[in-house]
Amino acid sequence: MPDEGKEVERRHELIIVGAGPAGLTAGLYAARGELDALLLESGLPGGQLLLTDLIDDYPGVEEVGGPELADRMLKHATKFGLEVETATVNAIKKLEDGDFRVTTDEGTVFRARAIVLTAGGTATKLGVPGEDEFAGKGVSYCALCDGAFFKGETIAVAGGGDAATEEGDFLTRFAEKVYMIHRRDEFRAQKIFQHRVFENPKMEVIWDTVVEEVLGDSGMERLRLKNVKTGDERFLDATGLFVFIGFRPNTGLMEDHVDHDEAGYFITDRDMRTSIPGLFVAGDVRSQMTRQITTAVGDATTAVITAEKYLKELAEPAHETAKT
Ligand SMILES: Cc1cc2nc3c(=O)[nH]c(=O)nc-3n(C[C@H](O)[C@H](O)[C@H](O)COP(=O)(O)OP(=O)(O)OC[C@H]3O[C@@H](n4cnc5c(N)ncnc54)[C@H](O)[C@@H]3O)c2cc1C
Image (cartoon, rainbow, N blue to C red; front, side):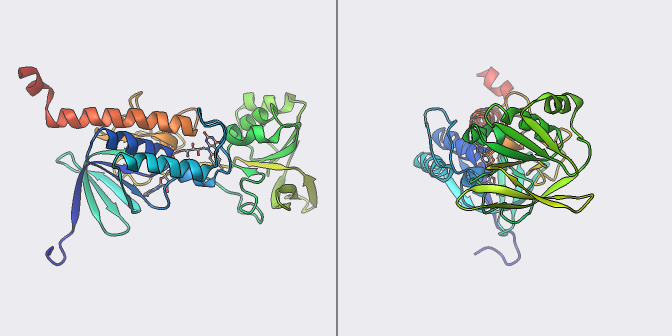
């Protein structure tokens, strides 16, 4: 029996935080490499895959539902013996002895020699009626993922920053017409992205306007819009709404400072090392150009292999290896 009031601490060589595509891939490689690894996930394993209706850009899998791919990834990793536990990590701190202390909402405290952080991120929602109901049935937060489903259709993009303007322009490869709905009378995006919008004949900007409601039947059919200056309301027929009003990486768990970019994403070297030795990150928490399933699983593969090397070096410091 532990002493009353004494914290129960569990030790592992490696702790992976988050069971999205990055975490499950990290888990697969760690278990297959016979590392003493534990994966902590706050919800159901799968991460953003659980929000994705259909995936048609994962090589070798022509079409698959997000939850099914999540299930397959989980089964694949646990087949190699990966241990997955439900726990919400609330803080990670590097201790003076070089270990990491991982605390959870559930009260269990873990220690690990290395961490692979794959806590992903969350797209900011508009928070309007119909948005959740039609998510995956017209409403999307990822142009690269879902743009191809809107060939020849009329769609709308909400937002006015770099992501909205760049992705809106990209979406005209598929859509016949893209309305940009922006709550102000000018974009805050870089000029180069603004020009692309203004010069693209398939794009039209609806200024000073917000989306009030997403409407439809089995799929999205129209939007109710409101002009914020006049208060006038109108309906816009559109089968898709891409929302680009922000994406927040889940990086707040780290108590120590970790180098990050302007938007808060962790900066790594090409081997997924962060500015804290022993902390590796992969997937959507990482500063990079593209955030996809393929990039998440690629990052995670590298992260675990680098973590494995790090652990080996801790166990056998280079000078000792050199002596033998
Ligand atoms: C609607 C939608 C459609 C998409 N479609 C595609 C597509 O078709 N093709 C494609 O390539 N990409 C697509 N994407 C993007 C893709 O899903 C992401 O790039 C990918 O999931 C990132 O993986 P990840 O493991 O880094 O993060 P995530 O998938 O975000 O997983 C992070 C995990 O960490 C867990 N977590 C977070 N905080 C904690 C904590 N404190 N403690 C414990 N666990 C925690 C979360 O619960 C989650 O399970 C889509 C995204 C969305 C939202």
